[in-house]
Image 1 (tube, rainbow, N blue to C red):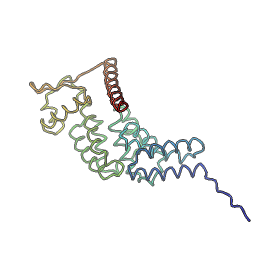
Image 2 (cartoon, helix red, strand yellow; image 1 turned 30 degrees about the vertical axis):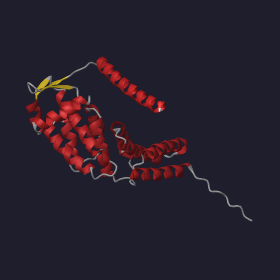
Image 3 (cartoon, one colour; image 1 turned 90 degrees about the vertical axis):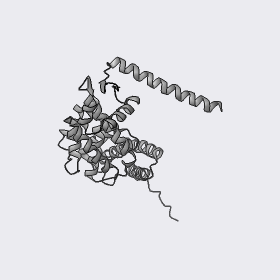
Image 4 (cartoon, rainbow, N blue to C red; image 1 turned 120 degrees about the horizontal axis):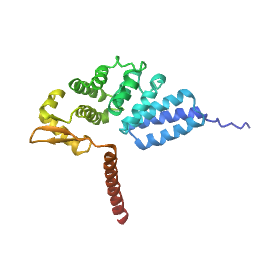
Length: 264
C-alpha cells in the first residue's frame, strides 16, 4: 500500500492565497478580514516572499487604506508602487494612477505633491480624463478650476468599486485642501470675494466653511456681520496643545462609555 505524501504549500503560494482572500474581502467590504489577511500576507512576505509579491502587497495594502479612509498611507503606498505595478487582477494601470493621484492630492503637502507626482516621469496621468487638470489646478492655486475638476473626478470615483463608498468623503477632503491653501495666503478676505474665486455662491461657501470650522478642520473664523473670513494662525506649541486637549477629551468619552458598559 502506497502512502501519499502531503504536498507542502510554499510561502509564495500562501501569499497568493492571501491575495485571493483579500479580493473576496474587498468585494464584500469585510474590514476585519482585510486587516487580518494583510497582516498574514506581510508575515509570509517577510519569511520568503519574492520581489514581485512584495510590490503587489503594497497595492493591496493601499486599497485597504483607501477603504478605511487613511488617504495619506494609501497615497504613499500607491506612489511607491508606480514603477513596479503588477497587480492587474485588481485594476488596470490607468485606474491605479487615478487612485494614486486622487489620494495624493488630498493627503500630501504641496512640495511633496510636486516631487512625488507632478515631477515624476513614472506617473502618467494624461490617460485619465480630468486628472491632469485636477492635479495641476491645486498646485497652481486655480480654485475655480480645481473645484470643477474635483467634481468630475468624484463622478469617476463613484464608479470605482474600491472608492465609491468614500467618494463623498473624498470630495469633502478635496474642498478642505483648497480652502486651507486659499486662506493661508490672507489674514482676512471677504466672503463674496472668496466665493467668486471658487465659483460658488456666498451662501454655499458660508455653510460649508461654518461646518468645517465647527468640526475643527479649518483654522478660520467667520465674521458674519462684516462678511469677512479671518485666518487663525497658531504656532506649533499651541497647535500641539489643542490637539492634546482634543485627544484627551475623546479618550475620556471612550472611558466613560466603557465604564457604563462594565457597570451594566
